Structures are given as C-alpha cells and as structure tokens.
Length: 305
Ligand code: NAD
Image 1 (tube, rainbow, N blue to C red):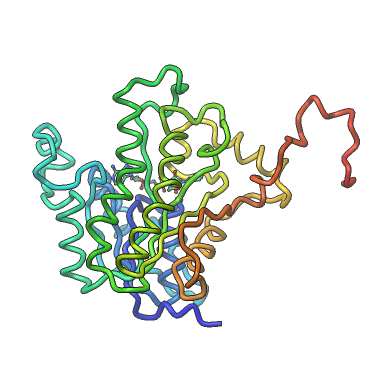
Image 2 (image 1 turned 90 degrees about the vertical axis):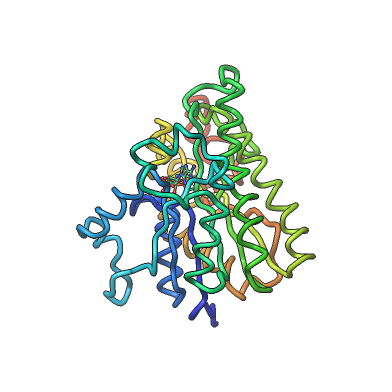
C-alpha cells in the first residue's frame, strides 16, 4: 500500500528536542519521503539548532535505512502570537527573542510558504500551561487563558494562516490527551480544558476546511510519553507505570507508534477520515477500572495472567 508522501511538504510545529511526538512525527514523515520543515519555540530555537548541529540528536535521527533524518529548514515560532504587531514590547526585547522578527504565526506562515511553495501537511504538536501544576480549582484566569491560547487557539491560528495556502486534499493533525474527556488528577492549569477545546475545534475545523478547501484535520489522543513537556507536569513516570499496568497492551508507548498513526492520518490512506480524535494509547482509554488498584487486590483477574 502506498502512503504516497514522496515530495509532500510537511510543516511540524512544536519540535524542541528528540524526545517528543513532534520529532518522531517529523522523522516518520521524512522516512516516507516528505520534505520536512520545523517550527521551534523561539526561546529554545538557538539551543535546538546548536544541539542539532553538535550531533546531539544523531542517534534519534538515524532512520531505518541508516540515513540521518534531516529537515529543509527550521523556523523560530511562538504560537501565542498571531502577528508580530501583537507581540508585547517586553517579549520583543527579551534576549531569547531579540534576534528574531518573524516568529508570529502570520509571518511564519508567509516565510514557510515562500520557502516551501505550498505545504501539504501541517502538524500541531505543542502545548503549554504556566500553571499546569495547580489544580483547576486554584488556577488563575490568566493561567487558564494562557493554556487555552498556546495549546488550543494556536491550532486555529495555524489553520487560519496556513490552510488558505494549502492545496485540496492537504491534511492537518494535532495532538491531544484523554484529560479532555476524563478527570486526570495533576493535569492542571486548564490543560484539560485546553485539550477538550482542541478536540472540539478539530471537529468544527474539519467541517469548515472540508467544505471550503477539501482539506482534512484530525487529532491523535496519545498515551503518556516521557517528553520534555510531560516531565514539566511532574508525574509522567507514574502515568507511564499506570498505563503499563492497566492498559490492554502491557507495554510502554513508543513515540514511533504515534508517529506511524500520524503518517496514516496525513496520507491518502485516510482520505475519508476527518474530524476524528484517534486514541493511540495501547488501549488505556477503553478501560473503566484500574486493574492494579489496591482495592482490587483480593479479586482474581478475570482473564488470569
Ligand atoms: P514536547 O516537549 O516534545 O513538545 C511540546 C512543544 O511545544 C515543545 O517543543 C515546546 O517548545 C513547544 N511549545 C510550547 N509553547 C509553545 C509556543 N508558545 N509556541 C511554539 N511552541 C511552543 O512534548 P510532547 O509531549 O511531545 O508534546 C507534543 C503534544 O503532544 C502536546 O500537544 C502534548 O499535549 C501532546 N501530548 C503529550 C503526551 C505526553 O505524555 N507526552 C500525551 C498526550 C498528548
């Protein structure tokens, strides 16, 4: 079966190192023949480029055929800002931003389109919540709105600026988490609300860009992965252990498995799929009970071991 991504141009927003889903998806798209362009959060852009050039990601960059995954160009971006005019002076003057001047989504989309021609595949793999460690009950309005702005509205803004320049049959993909639908203790600061909004927006955008331009947008709800963003939340190792002990498939999720599902969702193999949030989590979402709960220890497992 042909996934047919040869010479497709993919822009992946939200790659900051070799640990996260964005990197894995970018590499998988490259391995399928796509030309890859990356969006790197402005404050870590230099660090990312220095690490890349120093060979720190070489092991993770190694493809199945031994070749090193490479991108055409990486761009500094900040998904909090739609146009450079809206960037506050304090941010412009910040030493991590001062040398860049095209990192808002409008200017970014113009640069990428100028360099790449058109983009056929757009990946949104970014999220941030300044108060993620606070329960929703203690989250400030400012913290909540910031989570929604960088984690959810960022997708709408990317679609607003990229999709009109993308051809028919282009595909867009975002990344979500089950906290959109179920209460996940310690996933705070409005991040659960941001993921609920994100999944809802994927459905509405699927309708709008499908009707308007014949394009598709989907979402992957991924299981826990030890990425930089997840480590910042502070309980990722426990979540990985919980998933291993309680998901139908008793193994840790590999970012590659999410990347392979992503390749499917942006390829012609899924040409009739849009507006979907697909769980890629070893089946954890299907469970209604935690088998390793101390309360169940006297109950023999229904399926043995
Ligand atoms: P990651 O750290 O690799 O990716 C998050 C990226 O977002 C980082 O590169 C960061 O620099 C970038 N970012 C943050 N704020 C930004 C901004 N304002 N503008 C531009 N970029 C910004 O971590 P990840 O876990 O791979 O996260 C990717 C996506 O996957 C996120 O949407 C996350 O919520 C989702 N996800 C992660 C998990 C998990 O367990 N790691 C599970 C389900 C879903």
